[in-house]
Image (cartoon, rainbow, N blue to C red; front, side, top):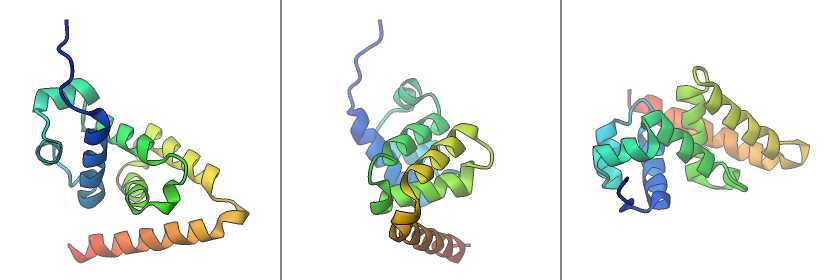
Length: 129
């Protein structure tokens, strides 16, 4: 019989989201996630399966209604597109679905916000190189 979880999954998802948004997917190590979430390695793997599994849950959570108005959600979308969408179909599908639901002719302001955030994120990323 599995032991009950001693952590709030919503809190872990939020903290991991902040870490992924700040460091990118490839720049985030398991140790970074353990530090930011205060989880033990075994708990993280048991609950989420892998770093990628956790990121998929974080991204799906971030891309709910109104995601394009929140910097954290925008940054997670950028990380997903930049780091993973080219190689992971699930990530790509989450991104495409969110974009198709959100951006149309009546939401040009949201598209502008997304584009500006993408450019800012890329500029910050390249400034660190």
